[in-house]
Length: 379
Image (cartoon, rainbow, N blue to C red; front, side, top):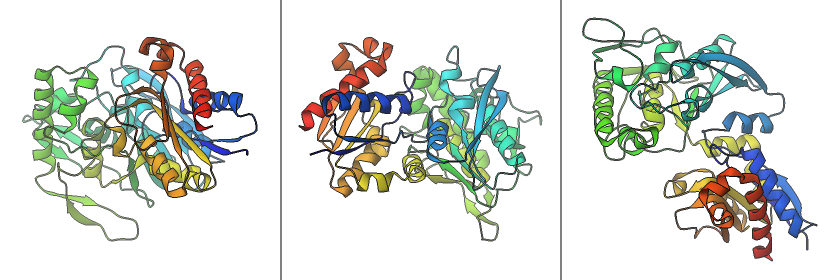
């Protein structure tokens, strides 16, 4: 009996886009089960590939090229996406992402270009913002982005602090009065990271090493973020909500998600943005819940399936949809480093290829092989 198979992977960061992975998995599956109907729904969770996922999912969306100041200090070509309803999607990975760093610079990388892209979207008349903040290169607390939007961060002499986490060490005062008002549709931060700003599970401790920080540097980065929290969190933050009067709310470093993207979540919350699960937002735009509801089998995946994957990343989100629909969920990942109990079957591209280097060198080949292996396992 032919199956309807929904293929909804995330990108394999740095090696293959979600669309390429979905096509390869589907090709491999079809080589074994030729009569099945394959429905491709490439996904994202607020990180790399989010613009691509929305562009594929939303007819009438338009990509707008832009040149911004990259995280290493040189101009980079990026883009943002306008949706037919007036919402703009801006992806931090395109403007200030880790992949844009020729050499890792954990103390000096910044988010200024991300703020420039946000400002461009607002200047073009965006009525709402979806800000995808995964894949960051910096730990600047979002100060770079806020500065590009009109905020001022100064040292004890009144001079602007330098960009990057290094500048936070001299931060004495923040003036947010120059920030633009929130658009009528609000500003939603797309992120599945739930880490707070500070502490052993905070931005510097958990994500600093991934951005090249030594233990000593991570401790200094933590100190800089703590200084930012004292400056911004010491008073009320004015925030506007659609359909409501402007009012104050307390900005807290302990808010889940404040530590996302090196504390960019915290900085955007200070502007008045709200946090939204990235996978669910992209899934809703794709109509993924409705697609999965009609599926006999669901395939998902990501580059590395690890302990953080269960915290709302694409495989966890898709597997929950499949469970609710009564369909088996299958996993294909570049590497598997956590239990896969939520899946009826799981395949590691690293194991298929014989090594991580081989899998990364030709991810589409091994994704096709993974699709064939999963098809044989499902029977």
